[in-house]
Length: 329
Ligand SMILES: Cc1cc2nc3c(=O)[nH]c(=O)nc-3n(C[C@H](O)[C@H](O)[C@H](O)COP(=O)(O)OP(=O)(O)OC[C@H]3O[C@@H](n4cnc5c(N)ncnc54)[C@H](O)[C@@H]3O)c2cc1C
Image (cartoon, rainbow, N blue to C red; front, side):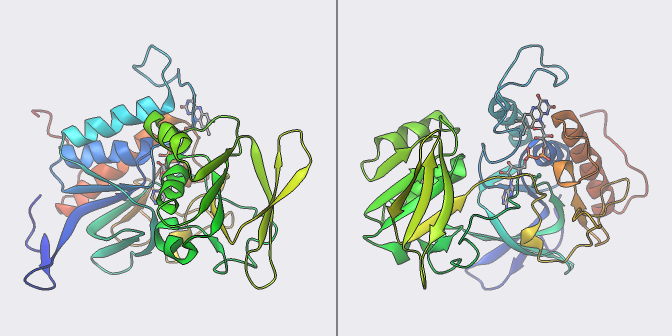
């Protein structure tokens, strides 16, 4: 959809693109929303931190998604849904959202690698957020503990660091670190790496990376700054590794809303409040999928949420009262 302020000009040389809708998260909820918004010719940007960083992305086999008679991996199903949205014109970008201004009329989304603007925002970040912290993590945050290698790698030049996680996000960040550090100790909580094969091959082949399969991070040790991490390989006693940095990309079971910094109303369980069209209390801001605690955690339900929110966005941006679908397309 072309609008007068599609492109705001901050300077002659650096025009800022304002999308009709920015979708945060490309799991089944966000990617399905993108199918509907892009099919409705809304200029759509989808931001996601990785193909295997969400609940569907880590699912080995899915057999109950309507229309799929064969068993396929969650990763492959996601690839198909994202491909379908791309075919209608949705743009996908790989970035981790770390902040947002959703209260202004034009919404601004801050990623590790860029700033994105939209007239509407659909939040679809799922519920793989971390709840419990590792001992020492909070105390040493910013003093060797980091969640962003892209931001902080240069501070660890020629040093030894630990990375823990098991997603394409964790592997990409570890590979980024190898451009600066002496050694990356990669603690993978499961026996196998869970990421697209080319990334698994790349990290296994990188001489600066030591892989520790089935290794769980127990503690980050240090007085003023990180001095070591304590970890345990499955079934073995705990060990200590001397490092100056600990980069953490672990997943848990909490709705991911940290980047909103309290701008949207939460209920007593820490879940976003939405109406029947998944509109939050803030105009132009929608939330869908596993992020909503009341939600039945199934891919088809997340996809349906995305479709309903997308149609509501289309209706709102085009100023209509009824949800309509152009069946002739
Ligand atoms: C092990 C397992 C097995 C399952 N099996 C099935 C099954 O067989 N059938 C079924 O129907 N359902 C299954 N589910 C449930 C299903 O996967 C979820 O209900 C569904 O994936 C939720 O979709 P979503 O889009 O809301 O969230 P997610 O799939 O979690 O997607 C969220 C997306 O947001 C991205 N994201 C998060 N934070 C950020 C950020 N800050 N910046 C940028 N991007 C971000 C993530 O990378 C991710 O791609 C399973 C879940 C699990 C964990």
